[in-house]
Length: 329
Ligand code: HEM
Image (cartoon, rainbow, N blue to C red; front, top):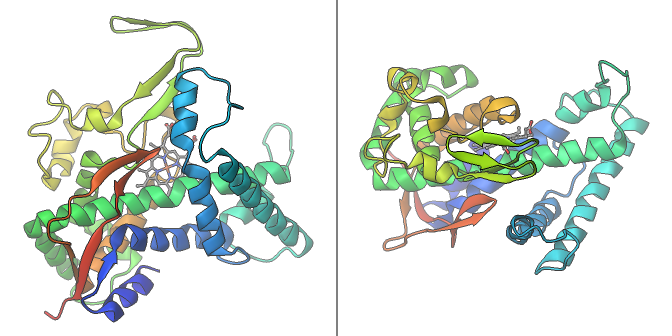
């Protein structure tokens, strides 16, 4: 799928593309293919619905902070509710089709259909299956797309890092085709992606609720208190990082990373609810980045500065307009 995007980029020969959208299309294909075998859903409609569903989430979060009841109206609410109903319906229909004619698909839905609770022996209901699949689709494509989009932005600002990645790819592949076996060897490529997620964490904050009264340092929290972990701020904290505003992938060399506090770097969260797709995202991100960087140059539109827009995820407002030119060397 990374090669499909690469071919589109090569065919575009010198045109300006919105790299944010390009990455979204690519990771969306990846997630739908791995979660649902790629079949049976109207990809564009689902993508639109996911957007409609997520758009007003800023309101939902603001209302929850203010402890307002969740049924209160807010902008985008009707569209969001409609989108959620559409998404559930679409997946439930697909599940019904699978139950009628079980195929030998090797995807997440097949695993979930076969799953049994180890204690009760129960299978998942249609509703549970649909909610799980939707969680994976929504949690698992925009985040990775944003990590890649911000990486392209930073590499435009740091061409020496882009060249170093290109040199690494040629060295690791010996100039041949890039395959999954090469991922482990692409250490600097991975570090660049990690450093991009430090400066622009796709999930810029996570929320927890205290289940019982608790003391953290000098703070006392009552049961039910909501706690926001501002990952973006932690990642740029001067007590935790040297020259935090500087893009410096070498920070993630194994020795340097080991010396750091475990909670200084949280792009995937931490603890029992750490991102279940973390390894998946890193393999996917490294392969997409390497496949595209190797084939083309991506230069930000002169004078364009992306503004940061936090909508659950950290998006570039106005997208990421970049001129894509095939590499001849
Ligand atoms: C660069 C890409 C990604 C980033 C930055 C990211 C970030 C996160 C974060 C911060 C959490 C924890 C949320 C919390 O603690 O409240 C999380 C959870 C989750 N992520 Fe990811 N994620 C990424 C990719 C993926 C992918 C590719 C998938 C699916 C294949 C995925 C599926 C999930 C799921 C299902 C959860 C909930 C896990 C649970 O609650 O047990 N994520 N992700």
